[in-house]
Length: 426
Image (cartoon, rainbow, N blue to C red):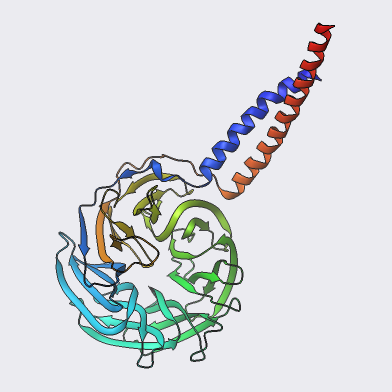
């Protein structure tokens, strides 16, 4: 019996070590990053209030930045070579622009606009490349258009709203298909996953199946949800994923697998809506894109030990293992924040927009626009192995058994030792 205990004891010690490693690895520590060097970083304080940049889009040598300044919509056209402002559009409308896309030589933007009666409504605008407003439309009360994609000659837009005016009791998903040449011609689908504030937050076209994928929240479950439509917005399938909180971004590889990023989690999904891999990452993941169809690029907001918020770039391989990281805003004298909206990737150059604040606290009184470009490293290397959620719990369960064995061994050895000491005294 003693031989068995002597065998189990070292195994149990190994189990304790495995638990400590698993706990340390379940969420990625920010201290493994190095500081990235953006080749330009713009800081623009447009007003004495809240200024936020959400998304960037690129056309030739111009980067378009969309957002809001003091609760009014704005767009800037910035030189891709040095960040100087080339074009600018400002509006007196109260509202925000959350996302953008370039189709041929037209810039389409989506967001929210408050009408004359104080009701928030969907907004879609069409601009030329010099930021002249060609046409615009508002629709769907008590909501906002959050994400835009393009396919089959149409624009596809996802957001939320309530069909009955001034009814805030049950917010629903809304998905539009819009004619790119005449944004007044559109159809839409409505989905109501639960009785509550359900929000469709991101939309993309699957390049393999050709279906329209929409991701968002099921408020009753407080989890991610995927809904799939055909090009005419006929519902095909849907699934609630066991991933908590809020998804912000979706990207596809050439096999039709989806990568969804959100609050503290990233998931790889197959074409049948099954989770292939899922990991937890500390921080708020608001933006994601694919690099060379082989690596997932994430933009994450995370605080340091002093409460300062910063932008971190994480690069993951196809198995969601982290291969490179960098902190873009570390060492600056302000907190840097990000929100929804797309990033732009040209070759190895990643373009990101967000906002900063030199004050801290729950309520920010003044923020300013930040936008930067940073290069993806050429020699991507493995620096950290992420333990998936399923494997993590399996490891913990096995290790707990070994820990219990260690406790039993300790108790038995102690008892045997006491008996031997009593015999010696006799």
